[in-house]
Length: 114
Image 1 (tube, helix red, strand yellow):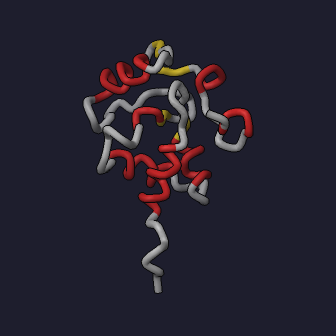
Image 2 (cartoon, rainbow, N blue to C red):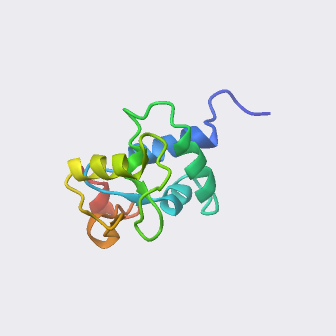
């Protein structure tokens, strides 16, 4: 039986997304790994599509494994996601973000310092 203090997968996904620093992006796979199952990438996409607090939980900072923006970004489409990322100084070229330059590594001590 589930304890009331245990978080749902979606809640853990939202917590992970909140860890992505301003000016950085993470991939669906990274978020899935952060919540304990690298195969949850689709669950991450579903959770972000249902984001209950898009003004607080920065789902726009999540891109695919190649840095591509979400064509069906739930909160205004790909153009809106691009605007939000660019407002943080993240360059978007041809619908993609350079993961080497802007990628957040949640497993790197340097990236976890804010």
